[in-house]
Image 1 (cartoon, protein in one colour):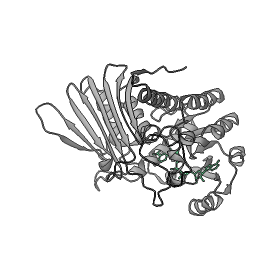
Image 2: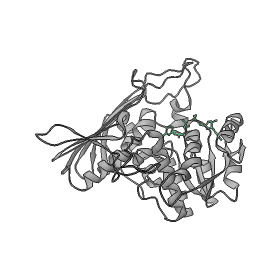
Image 3: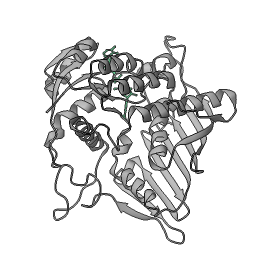
Image 4: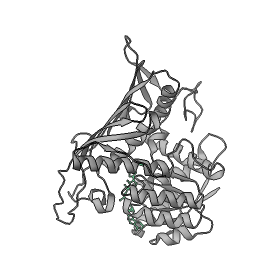
Length: 370
Ligand SMILES: NC(=O)c1ccc[n+]([C@@H]2O[C@H](COP(=O)([O-])OP(=O)(O)OC[C@H]3O[C@@H](n4cnc5c(N)ncnc54)[C@H](O)[C@@H]3O)[C@@H](O)[C@H]2O)c1
């Protein structure tokens, strides 16, 4: 039983409440159980709603209360990006294990401070790049590592959304000061981490960004990027291209990742999360349903095989992530498949380089700090 406290009762706060309050019901052994202790949100009425739904023991408007609770071993930060650094660093200083939503910080400097604090405190840390817990992407990683796809030449990704606000106001996500990058930091960061997870580290980028969004109420004067396109070179000689948009009308959520090697190409799409397509030269695409007993997480909730196998959804991947985090806190020093805060920092460094390149029009080298 691991005691947790959390900041944020918004969209992600709800997702983590659902995942951590139910993960012990998974079939997978050993069972891992979380005790949901303190939930902090400045909107106490919202926190109170989650308390009733997910049995949090107490709610507070003040995150300091959440990080002080002596029984809380793990602190989850599901707040807006400008509320990641101070509470997470303060929780590290109190020896809490740390799980932070992505992006880790609003820029590389901030992300580096958060990572350094976690390392100094010698606690387990994980950054919420949840794509790492999509079974089909884990299988893609295994196939690449085994050499089945040959030498990798290209990684290619699109992350497209039409982020709509019914009253046309712009939330904290659109503010450079509050969020950091827009399409780059919010959406692109997921796929940049995937390029690193699947293929290799990013060395150099050249990029463009555009912004169309305007705040109708003239409250927000620092709207960040709506769209970006970046070409990148990886350390191992492969190339990568990333595109993300939050103003791609009609795309509720399009997420595509392709990896081309000398022996074939692999393709994954968010809309068909349990499927992986593999095309080899001279053969048409072969669909692999990643639901067989030998596939990752296929029997996470229920037995598979004799009674059939069932597709996995995005929500399940948050449960896989929660299980992984609880397992790391229970014993291992680090979370081997989950992104660490170092990964969160490195992605922030790449996002910063993309923004710099869009301003300079030049190639930007990535220099990672120790
Ligand atoms: N992993 C993913 O796939 C994914 C998806 C969506 C969002 N996110 C990330 O999750 C984080 C939260 O995003 P969201 O969509 O849940 O935002 P949200 O706006 O829905 O929720 C944020 C909550 O934090 C609360 N809050 C703000 N300032 C606070 C403070 N100082 N103290 C306590 N509470 C405070 C707000 O009242 C709000 O309820 C962001 O970092 C975002 O990038 C990740």
